[in-house]
Image 1 (tube, rainbow, N blue to C red):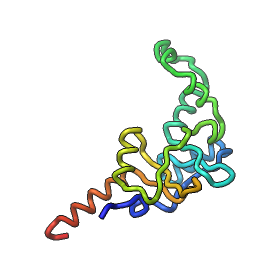
Image 2: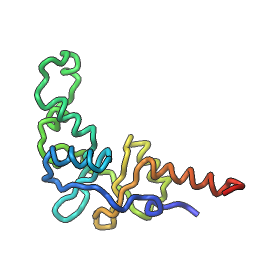
Image 3: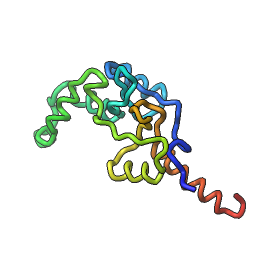
Image 4: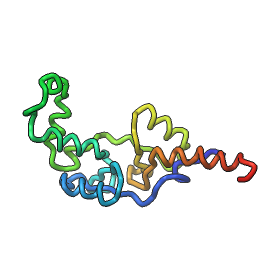
Length: 154
């Protein structure tokens, strides 16, 4: 029997609205001890994901490039520069969000995460509304479970 996303996902998800300010998002990351979260529009649909890396980019680059070596400045992309100036979740998020259905196989989630170098996938219903989130740790919990099932002590 295949394990589905809904079998291992977290259903209590930290999320923010698209107009959430930078400081509110930074506080939510810290207070909830998460590394990122989905961004929802006014209808509750997932439109992007904000990660700690997105917020760190703003902190590191928002003040400009004074004191940064010229070579580093030359390598920064315009998209990163624009994101660093953002003030809301909509400005800072990665979009569109890569999402997955609760009925998808965990194996499929693992492939998406690996290929896209993604740490978390918002789980959405057929209308695009958030129902959960699956992380790398959730995916790897399936490996632990199958080992227990195969173990003579298990």
